[in-house]
Length: 251
Image (cartoon, rainbow, N blue to C red):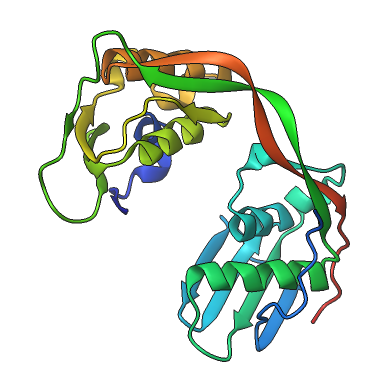
């Protein structure tokens, strides 16, 4: 997916989102040729970048590393140690040969087990979730006839989606409300749509909305603008429960 935003994205990210077992490495698992994990002194946001032969994570917490390595969300990580979300690290690693992103993630899993002594188990936990189905009148967007990658573009806080799948719409909802979202629409195509959240936002703009308000705003937008029914329900969610994690030594 290609995401194109203007330079005001940090201020309007909410609008865009609305619009915006054991964890140890197995035997024989591919490993980085060289890797360094150090406490970070970098200010600002966590950044992750890859090339075919390298992985770089800056100002990244252990929980952020786990999210990228295992493809989970914040709410799917459970553990008692607060430092895993607070302490920041710089990770620099290189492979012996070109690797896919999936292979890079598997190598990071091994690195976390080695340097952080990370072990965990998986279980299901009942959580409040948003369940999305198609409304009685059907979806208010159309299947795309164009070719190419999907894209989400914002202009004056209006979001235009081209060739977007339901997974991308669900990600938008999750990013806005930070709770699990379950797609039960049965829609499998690629779609074009436009969302204008401004009529639904409280006075003061995106930043004035509380977490509770965001859920109700999202429900209104997706029902009225897209014809999708969004309900809050208790649902079983897969979670990763950390059994052990240690702060790494400098290396």
